[in-house]
Amino acid sequence: MRRWMQIGALLAALAAASAASADTIDVNGVKRSYTAQLPAKRLVPLVVVLHGKTQRGADMVARTAWPQVAKREGFAVVFPDGLNHAWADARTKAGPALRGPPEGTDDVAFIAKLVETLVTNGTADPKRVYVAGISNGGAMAMTLVCARADLFAAGASVIMNLTDEAAVTCHPSRPLPMLLINGTADPLVPYEGGRGSSYYAADGFWSTEETLAFWRKLNGCETDDAEVTDLPEKAPADQSTVTRISSRCPKGHDVVLYRINHGGHRMPGFAPDARFPKVATSLLGPQNRDIDGAETIWSFFSQFP
Image (cartoon, one colour):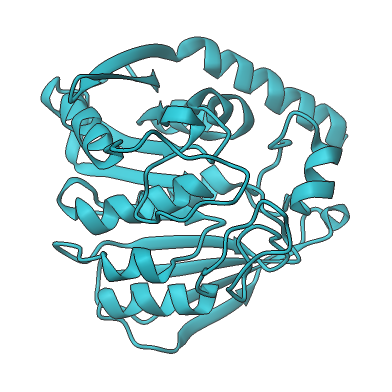
């Protein structure tokens, strides 16, 4: 039964991908590419989805539920491409074997211009623009929230923690709701902070608890957990479970963490997030299938403003 569900999800992803279109935009003389799935309606919510390092926007189209969720809910979604398959987030220290984008790359300007273009042409409602990213894209999502909070209504980061470098440069113009999804068995971005066990891991990560505390402080929330809820285990074979941790915050300043217990450096989802799932599991740890990342993030985003 699960195999047929996976096949169905794959076919739906392929159908959604065929409805998306590739385009480019000029940013400071550099041609930048992105894939967009835009509904016929105007003034709709817009979600900017940022891929991880070594990936492209097309990987997010094919291996997440974002296209299907966007089609069902009627919002626009864009999948930008980082240069050299990476993002120039606020960190300057990358993993030892993976290069970042060219020196001088301004990805804040890229995403800002992309958002402003879709707002100006009447596609996106400026009050309902959101940014979500995974891994390096999660770091970029946090960088955008820090640098251009005026553009967004909420942000989400998957499998990423802050570093000293990212935190010290973070001065949002206003508090924004923030969602975090991190795995406790992540070999690249360790839940407890420091350096991961993978050869490709960088050093200097804060723990997830420190990252959560940072966003709570920025948003004027209380320091302790509001509610800690263990979610139903829908996929016992995935080797992981999910705990939702909420915060006591002023209205509209929500900060929420989905802790993937024994989860790896993976996007939670009902369909495989990698071309070779077994290889991904050996290198990155288990993928949780009790929740779907895109569904969970959109459920959070849709509450704001």
